Image (cartoon, rainbow, N blue to C red; front, side, top):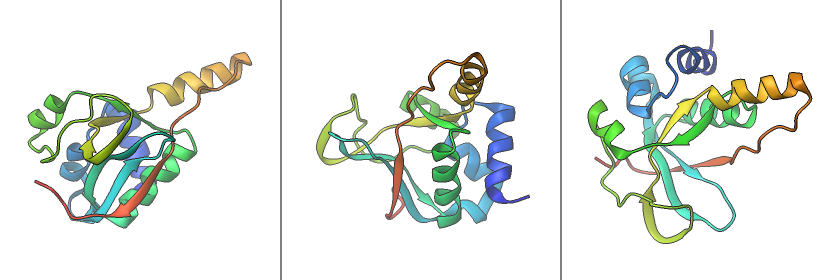
Length: 140
């Protein structure tokens, strides 16, 4: 299995998975210099997570694009309990920030499962916000 498959299975099994949980589960292979930002018109400088490998960044982007997983905003406390937070101001809403802000998110299949059920019932799928990656230094 690929890292992408492993991540999808892990998120499907545990749901509401933080990036710290992924680091703890998959170790050094997911650590690196890449970051994922919210890619949404009208918002900028909204960092979801940093310090990840290119492979992890690409796997997450592909899974989100395929609507297999999604980012759900969460409290920074989730990351505090998992043992690591970013040293950035927390984004309180989706908007254009002039300086980098952290948008704490967990990975979930809840919406992906809901979309599959809706698809089977003939309902329109829910739009998922895309993300993009960029090289960034890890912030502790």
